[in-house]
Image 1 (cartoon, rainbow, N blue to C red):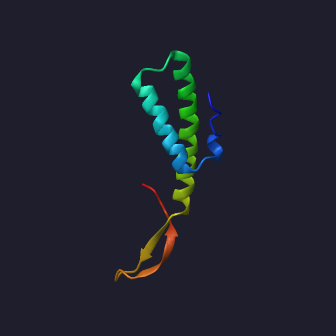
Image 2: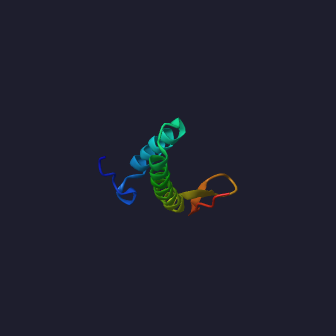
Image 3: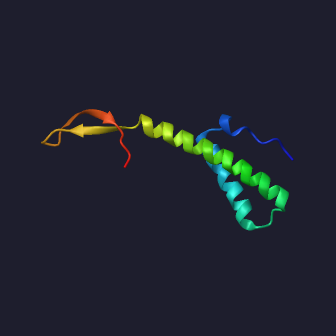
Length: 81
């Protein structure tokens, strides 16, 4: 089996694509138990990397602040929720 890249070195898009492949393989139900366990562990690593990258991106997003007339007056850190 080919060496899989370290999720920490993958781009978000590549990690997400790899995670989708892992999920697809697990959902197919065709993987033997040992492979399913390995896929689950790999998927968990990929999920963690994707979540961390999304959290970092969200922290960099700024919301535009407006005055009473709707004119942009500055930016503020993004506040989820």
